[in-house]
Every structure is written in C-alpha cells, then in structure tokens.
Length: 145
Image (tube, rainbow, N blue to C red; front, side):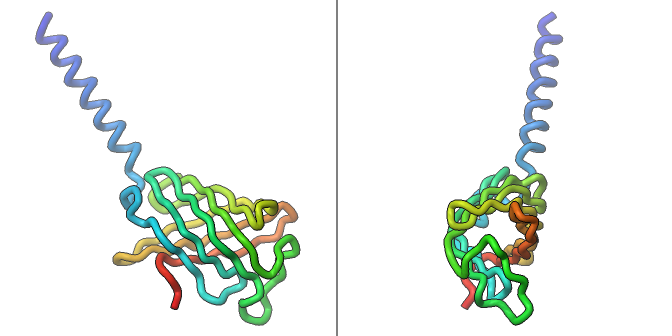
C-alpha cells in the first residue's frame, strides 16, 4: 500500500505544478513592463505610470484631447486635459480588458492588445465611453521625447 500512496502524492504534485505553470503563462514576467507609458500627439494623448502583474495592469496619469491632428473627433464627455486611470485584466499574454476613468467621473470600457518588440512594449486598443463614443488608445513603453 505504501508505493501506491507515494505514486498518488507524486501525481498530485505534478498536477499542481502543471496548473500553477499554466496560470502564470501571461508573459512577459510580472513587473517587467512597470513604469511610464506615453503616446505622441494623437487624438487622445496619454501619459501613464503602469504597474504590471501576471494577471493585471493598472496605473494613472494624464490625458489631452487638444493636441491631435485636424479631424480628431471630439469626445463630448472629456475636457481638453485631465487625469486618467487604467485598470485592466490580462486575459492572455497579449489581450487586455478593463476600464479607464477620466477625471474621476467619466468611465469607459477598455480593450487593448499588448505587443512586445525587442525590449519595448506597446498597447493599441480603444475605450468606449457611456455615451458610445470610441476613443482610440495607443501607448508605448517609455517616455515620448
């Protein structure tokens, strides 16, 4: 009976190790992308300080809507500049889903795709406000000069 118990414990340990490995498979590693993320002069310019874990990304910073090229659609619920927070869950190594809050009161549903090129990351996505206005979101790891 003793060898059966040893095999049972070994199988249980192997299953636990496999499940744990799969649960944290959202590369890059936790905290590897922490720090400033910014966008250039586009319709919704963002400057965020993001914190990353295996499962989530969150952070806060500022936004501007008055620096984009001509033809940018106005976001009726947003002022020209203000504060923004991002809270998102990593549904895979590249997919993000969550929310953005502008000026502590205007909420938007956020979806985005994380791309890692070399040692730098970027997120392309959108934020949809309660009135149905879609804001294009594009930010890159680091500071835009």
